[in-house]
Image 1 (spheres, rainbow, N blue to C red):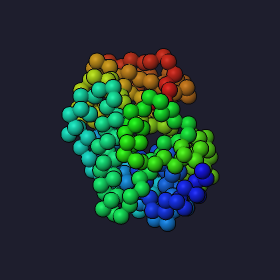
Image 2 (tube, rainbow, N blue to C red):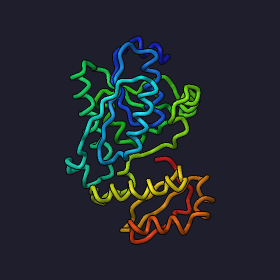
Image 3 (tube, rainbow, N blue to C red):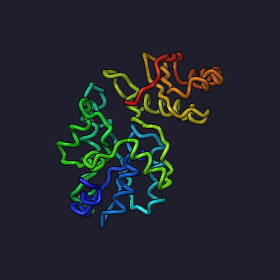
Image 4 (cartoon, rainbow, N blue to C red):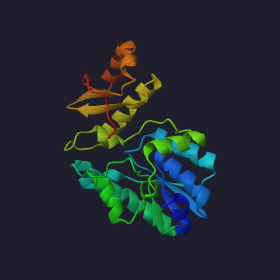
Length: 250
C-alpha cells in the first residue's frame, strides 16, 4: 500500500510521538496526507528530557498539534519488577493513555512509528500494539530505516541523524527492580557523556557499576576522554566497566 492511500483511508489520525526519527517522519507524512492529525507524547520516567525537547522541536517545525501526557509507569507493579516481557506491560500502559486522550479529542485511529526494518519477532511491545489495534503505516507501506533517514534529511528534520534510542528502562537488567533512583542515575550519566560528545552509546547498570557500551565511532573518543568519563561516572556508580563488543541497537 502507498502511504498516501493509507491516509486517504484514515484521514484523522493520532500519532504516538516519541521524539525519534521514525515517529517524526510518520508525523511528517501524516501532516502531508491526512486531513486531521494530532501527536501524543507520553512523558514518563522511562523517557529522558531530551526526547521531549526533540519532540517539541519537530512538532514546531511541522506546525503539528502535540499533547504531552504525564504518566507514572512505575505504578504498575509488573513494570516495576522488570520481567523479560516488561515492554508488553509498559506499552499497554502508555498506549492506553494515548488511546484515552485521543478518543476525547475525536480520534479513533492510533499510529506508531514501527518501520519495515524493525525485527518484531521478539518484541513484546509490538504484540501489545497489535492487541490494541494500533497501526504501523511505515511498516505496512514498506518504509525501511534507510528510507526514513533519507526523508528526514530531505525535509530537514532536526532528528534526521539522531541515533536509535531505547527507553531508560532497557539499561536495567531483567529481574532487577526498576526505581526512580536508578532511572534518574542513568539519565544523569548519559546526559553527562552526551555533553562530552558521545552520541551512540548506552550506560547500563550492572550490580552497582556502570557498564559502558559504545558504537563503532565512539571508541577513539573514549580513549581521548577516558579519565574524564571515569570521573563523571564514578560519581554515580561503584565502578565503571567497558563492554568491548561494539554496541548494537536494541
